[in-house]
Length: 493
Image (cartoon, rainbow, N blue to C red):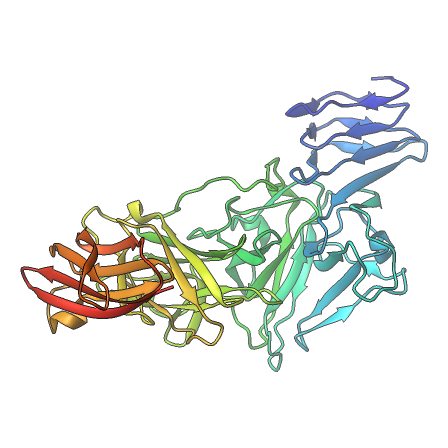
């Protein structure tokens, strides 16, 4: 391959299986996957190899053979960063320095103190191979000192293609004991899969990736699955959190293995399903920001924290919403329990980022048996929602609300007790919401203050939401069924 200028079009795969010698720049556009086969040498000569990035495509350059620059050339790796968002980043080359992030803000996590250290200046601070960092790309410098950040940064040097051995921190006295921010050190995706090559020593099975678009963390446990749509794949130049299984000082370590590199569209959010049956995936969302959690059941799990299956909740920094389950005082992003019989109810906590309306979505309900009830109880309003029939529900939340907002019930709502307590009626803005237990049907009538019926609707078991077409003000609503009658006063805004 002798060409004055090598430009590879964005084809899906480019496989190099014979010795190739270049005499010009080799530019690999976003979306192209390049593999240097075993026993093959790609010699760029005295020119440059540029791996380009964009919003959707991380670089993907996989070396099984050898990459060389016989006449003094160099490799360059581009990393695209969206504006005004913190990103978890890592270096794909040896001997990089923070100068590559000139006109960005950078932070380095210190586990012993549980704090962040600024590493903006001087510009000669090494970026350790296999370590993760946070970088902030801004459209206007918050401190009014520096020029606008460039859309991307460019690393230069020799690409990492060897195992990286890492000693992990788990300081007894640290408020964040055991949390370590690592980084994918390769210019290609890396799979967190529990393979023996990872040499995990006192490390839990869940890793965490920051989703800049939603402002929260995605999880992946290589035994039980998680919320990350890309499974266990970590994109090139991306950092990730791990936590030691024992957080009280016992030695912990791992190897970031070159053998687990893989071409994968890890920058894309693909659809995915549960790894195991009986998994409930819950998402709370408002204005594009979201948090996710999983409540599931596995025979191998216990009611306590299992480092092999669970993932404790890690809150992202800033004013972000939070959604997590709680069992025996432990907060979970990924919560695997032994059986529904032992845990028919699970407490679901929610912290809003601001006062307003939120949407809670439930998926993977079809991973349970067809006759398995799954209800969501809103403890603030007393309303029950059948998540098998109505997977998306809207809620109004105030920042002063109790964090223990919901309960998830994996059992039927039996018709026992006082009728008024069983039927839940409330209004929100211009809607009327009614919850009635299973096997109960009836009619909801709405009256003005003079007693005139203004609207009426048929009511079925579960949650019913009705839009009103009346003036703002106070009204009386009455639910009538064979089992009884319930009357409430509501306000339409």
